[in-house]
Amino acid sequence: MNNKAQDNAVPLRTRLKQLRAQQDPAQRDRGALLIRGRLYTWLASERTRLRAAGRKTPYQIAAFWSLPEEPGLQALLRQWVEDEALGVSLPVVTGPNEPLGFRQWTPNTPMHEGAYGVQEPESAPAPPPDIVLVPTLGYTRQGDRLGYGGGYYDRTLAAWQAAGHPFTSLGIAWACGDLSDESYTPAAHDVRLDSILTDKGWAVPAPVL
Image (cartoon, rainbow, N blue to C red; front, side, top):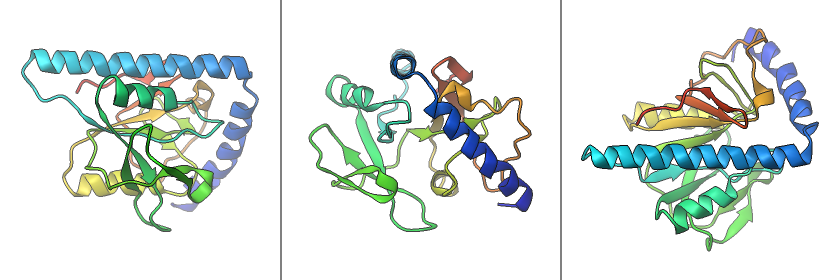
C-alpha cells in the first residue's frame, strides 16, 4: 500500500468501527435480516433465470462467519445448505501474507477459533467458489472496498483471478460504511468488488450472473 492510501485508510477504519459500534442493537438486527432477505432473493432469482435459460447455476458459495459487529449471515448459510442444497465454505487463515484457504461447511461441521477470533471449520478444503461474500468495513459506489487492513481478501481474490477462475464478488457492509463523501484512495493492490449489499439495499447494483 502506498503512503497516501495507508494514511487515508487508517483513520477511516477507526471511525467506521466507531460508527458501526454506535448502531442501535435492534436496528442492527433488523438490518442484518434485510441483508439476508435481499441476498437470498437475489440468488434464488438468478438461479431460476439461469435454469430457465438452460445455463449452469452457481452452486459453491464462499461465505464468512460473521463477527458480532458484522451483519449476521449464519442463519442464511444454514438455509442455503439445508433448504437449497448449496455448497457453502468458510475461510481459514493459512499464514501471514498468504491468500485465505476455504473449507466446506455445514451446520454440523466442527468449528474452532482461528486467527483474529474468527470461527474456522475443521473440514476438507472446498472447491473454488462461484460466489464470494466479502466482509466489508467501508465501500465506495464503484465497488472499492476498505477492509480490516490484513490484505487477506485482496490476496485471495487476486489469486483466483490469476488462476483464471471465474467468480462473482459481493461485499457485505453496513450502510454507515459508505465512503462517498470521503477522500478515500484505494491501494494499488486492492481488488474492486462486483457489488456491495448493505442494510439499506444494494450500494452497488446486484450483479447479473
